[in-house]
Length: 596
Image: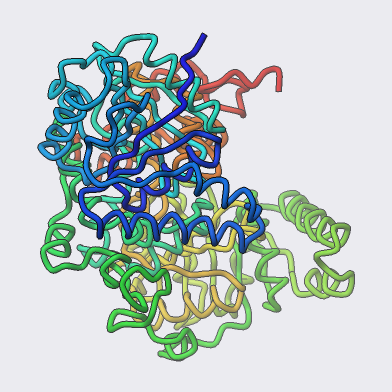
């Protein structure tokens, strides 16, 4: 039988500690909340009251339940008050010496059978435990912020944590309505080890002026369905906290460059730009602690003003290609009111593309998302061709042919001869250098990347890729077209992976490395990222959907360009691809899909 915890102590009543107090009290457990001073105690009490009052206002907590919750919580100054609790959770700032001092004191104060737990997200639980005479009763219980809402708890055992302590804490998590993943003591555990490499990479993009903070955040929200962009998330976490976690993970985790804090991060922390809590981080907020973003000197001008800056009038668009992407792009332009010339290799392919577009538009009508008259008008705007010569009078060409550089270069050389001057030539490549395609023409200033996401009619994001030869007018035109299509266009430089793939695939690769090291299971890693970080899919679910061969090809491109050891494809990924386990399309990837 699992041990029954009747009284729990919580040390430290910041946002995290107050949230943990609320979790226990909501679930009928008496809590003794402890702080270092009366003023800190009052701040903690106010945080708890504010959170429960908001829950009542939103109809998520009855007034009677709120009052009962508060009756279960006692407040005290000093650790001596914890002499008779069954479990203590420490939630003080991430400094090892501070935590060790607290644990040494708890060891002196608490009963011999009391379990001592730390909520650390990055420090070594083992190093904290050795400050006590009972390291076998020390464990990590890592809640996620906001603790009352987030379902995940990482239960971290050291090499000496007693199995019955682990079992008791797992049972407690179930009683709290949480999903626990039990793991060994390693830098960053699961969620932070995967999350912070990605966040650090996003900061590096800002530091190098590769893309704006707004475009990076929009790209990850719209391209990957994430609840927040990486820079807004850094502001929420706190840049000082993020720096400490990255620095600890870098020193404890084998000095992987992916976790070496980007210099800009240290500069911002030194300057007091800590994110929401200081009112200024990557964004500027209404006041310290406010979630409301206000304009500052880095805020881009209003869309209308930006788009009026030298963009060219586009009325007729050519789309070259016959695959899924080409079909979707034809539909998007036709629905937005553009005349479209679809060019494929032969009448047979043209017929197939025409049927695919009709089928998709008809689905829109059946689902009530498109009027019959609008469907007919869209189809009426499309002309079908099997020769590039019909692109002689278009204003924009979008190429969506196979991802082979030689094929694209040959196509762009032909377009250079056929198209009139001033036409914007766009490639939808997701992995090839746009400059290589541009230099196949005599007009590289007119060439941009327009990377639509699949399925193009649904996905709201387009990456607008400018090369070092792309003119400001061509970039402005591409942005204006995205806006006219009802899409969000994000501008970035011509680097492997652009924004989304460059941030997404190294994170997926890190997850494969974690599995390969037998640190955790695919299920637990997926749970951790979905429940701890709010991701719509876990990394292994996503890899099986994307295709392991596709993921490997993108990761190889990134590694080839950046030459960072941390970007080298995980051997396990290469082995699965070699074995033909490519994901859902072959019914076997990281999971077996044959019975689904």
